[in-house]
Amino acid sequence: MQIGRAQMGEVLISLHEADDPMFGVDVVPFLATSFDDAKKLWAVSKPSIERKFAAHGLMVLFAVPWPPQGIYAKRPISTLADMKGLFWRAYNAGTTRIAEIVGAHPVTVQAADLPRALATGLINAFMTSSATGYDSRAWEHMTYFYDAQAWIPKNITFVNKAAFDQLDEPTQAAVLKAAAAAELRGWAASQERNRWYLGELAKNGLKVLPPEDALAAGLKQVGEQLTAEWLRKAGADGWAVVEAYKKH
Image (cartoon, rainbow, N blue to C red; front, side):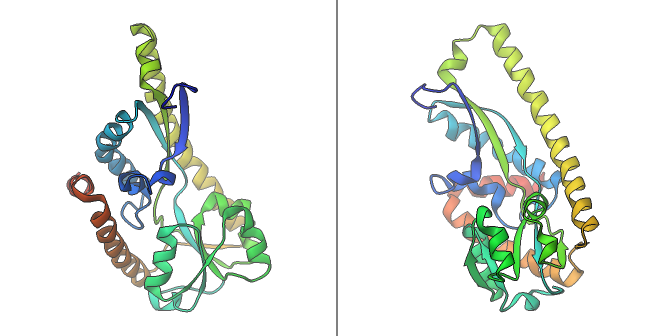
């Protein structure tokens, strides 16, 4: 993209958090725990992310969310204490840190290996989306799904800025109009699809529940700790975004 071999692309932005912490703002656990909050977080973080893309000759067109992350478990979880000792699937820095904080045992399992890990009993709890839980037939091995909406990651579609600048003005306007429409359509479709996945999980026997008050309070505390850790990496840009998000 930067050297012009392709004019447009799409990426799960958090995959590039190692390059810049700001690219991981949408996967800070328990910072934005609803689609509405995720939309607010995108609104306040977008200018910073646009600047960082622009530094590489790229232009952000639109972003669309994945379904939110929830907790699958074999046994009931009512408080953080119930998570201690669980064999907890870890697949990124956030899920590993959650395990460390609550006293669970992190076990690295990528999505492709999740069905086998469930079938062999390698893990007895994990965090992922309703979509991945459905694809991995989580109900065959788990009993509960807590709809914690821990984070809502996004894919960003972008274009090589030099290629965009070569378009005539009517075409540029048409591209931007289509991008804005795609973003609106994508957010609505993601929410609708998430509702469908939750319904299918329940239909197949999982107990789909919101976290109990004590668990929700504990997860919020975990989120505050992890947000503080992220802010130490993200610096001034991160602080500005989180402060604006809190006021939004």
